[in-house]
Image (cartoon, rainbow, N blue to C red; front, side, top):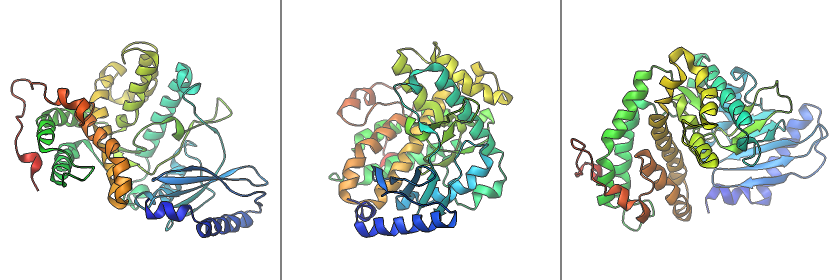
Length: 360
């Protein structure tokens, strides 16, 4: 178990965080009227519900590799058009964030099963991305946020393949050389995806990395903006990365292809916000390339955790990390399930497997 998770489970840490919370509340004339209750605990973060005389607040502590979230949210919120709740207080050095309990978390069973509600969520997600892209450059630059821009994708992916292949066989993140080579043979596809996104001319923005139900807060009023939380994985990236996985999940949920209704209409609700760069039909061609970049970004975010975690945590994270790496190339898995796909013949002119992926 990671050191920071052990700390989060200690009574001394809880006393320290509750003392900080009480001091924050006292400064604004609010009292805590009950003990904090843990909502979630994972390698990435822990969240606690704090009952107060003015309603519930939520305390979040992020893992050290994601401790920048507290300061990032403070910087983002004023430029979000209400799409990001303004924190009541943050402790940047600790990665602590105290936020108001406004809105309700989106649910897969109701919100994401409703095409109209999903369209609203995607439209507001696009609005947030455009607002962040238009924010003054120094607002976020000072935070030193990482990025994975389309131009960097091929080199980042090649380096990742080499790093995994160089690990000892007993390491859970090891990638057998033959599969590293097979994935490398598909690097041409990654380059083509990067080129398509670069050619689109759509400016990069800072985004969450993946749009999941637990990162969406639905306001009580239809006129109020949908809110987005959970920025620990945020990176500078192409905006279309955000919805690729969400679109695939919607296709699975409704049993249709991306071009069929109701998914098509949901996607159009997002794409029409970028009308300055093309029609929905033109922009839809960028979704598949953006999905590849999204998986690469998710791989990097999980690797950040793995590098700082304990060996047993790496063991738990390894399947997800290797899955994201494989999905970057359009392969379902780099384990036995994905061998057939990896061994499929490549089109004429494609890169042939070689030793480059095993380079130190």
